[in-house]
Length: 110
Length: 114
Image (cartoon, rainbow over the protein chains, first blue to last red):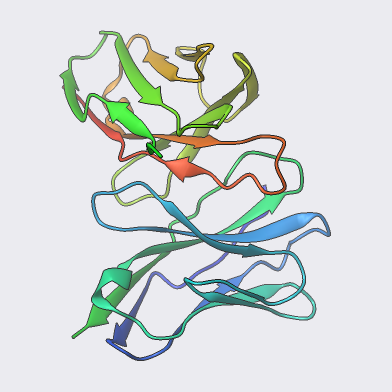
């Protein structure tokens, strides 16, 4: 399983943008980059995914490096409800398995 | 639209016992995956069921087994419980065959083995 590396924790202030980095130097051509987050006492929830191009949705943006060896999840304006553990996951095309690491614990200060 | 539900929410068992955890898929989904999450760790993939058959398995021993029913609900069975089986067990449902198989997770069952 391809591995990802994320910082253990990050802090942000409310209403400010947050950039969550992820390194995945062993990514293969068929691996999709996925982000899930897990709020306290809940199961993980899907945030966003991409293959090569940058992606935007109502929750976040995903910026993917040109060589695909790293990516950044961008929360444009952090709220207290965004405090969670964020997981960067590589998922092989056609595979249903999600391989989670330890993720980044995001703290949002009021 | 009903989300993924799991029962029970909490469970306490002793070593050597057997346990059955249950999961109801989100409406319209045909695939169920089970994950084990130890304290402070990310979830670990146990196995997945699609059309009532196992469709992939992680690095878990055979005493972890499962079932998927015609209504796509699922059970996770663990035999001969060990202390290390204490964890949060998460179920996720998805639709295999669509353009993107986003997984929707339930709130989990917290299992404590004494």
